[in-house]
Amino acid sequence: MLRVLGGVYRNLKEDGAEDGDIQEFFKRLDRHMTAPVTEDSIWRTTDANEDFEPNASAPIMRQQNVVHLTKVITDWYKKAPAAI
Image 1 (cartoon, rainbow, N blue to C red):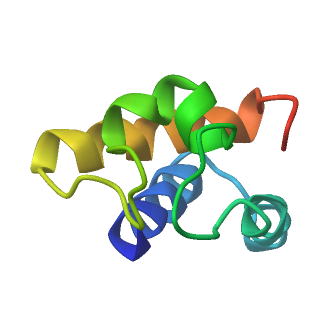
Image 2 (image 1 turned 180 degrees about the vertical axis):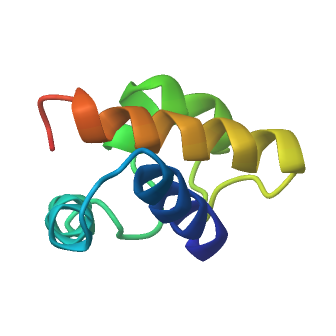
Image 3 (image 1 turned 180 degrees about the horizontal axis):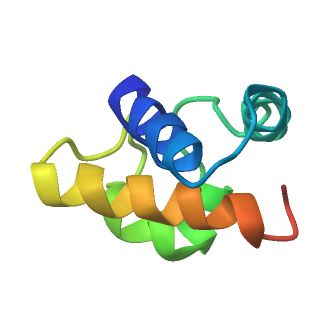
């Protein structure tokens, strides 16, 4: 997950986001960072679902999953799910 969040940070900085705004966004994600991933979490009820196996403690770490999950979370910065 650290690789994914690092990619999200890089993407947001490239898009011109300020560090303080990124920190606030990451703080909003913090309560969703428990493991294992439950069926009613944002990781299973959003587009991020394809990057997590049932009862996982971390995302699937294949490159295509890391890239996809990084994009999903980056997109949440502008249009977050209601749970965030």
